[in-house]
Length: 118
Image (cartoon, rainbow, N blue to C red; front, side, top):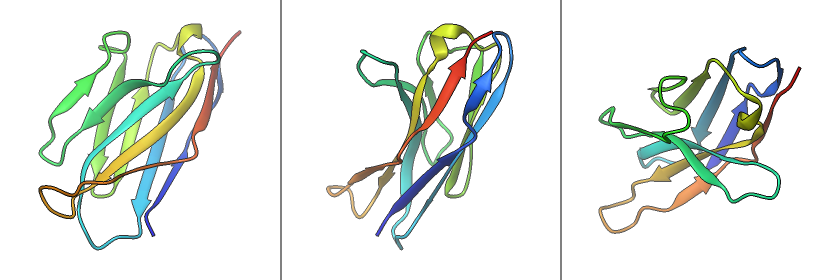
């Protein structure tokens, strides 16, 4: 059973930094893309950043130059700098398991709250 566990959220003042971590486990198959999404109250879940096994990254325009995604094996990180109140949301980690080219199920973590407020 695949498990996805996030950590690192919390309360931070505007302009501050946080680092989120996500550890995926529970399968003998490799993880392909790993990434971060967020959902603010009353809004749809949106992509924040993703990274492939080959190191290709993708960022939402709203976080470019402030957030950095990195990966070490089955762990993915999100370094968030110069945080703004609008970054307040529940942050979710999503991982994709590559069973074969046609079977790539995805799994989500429970989410970690990030609150940016003075």
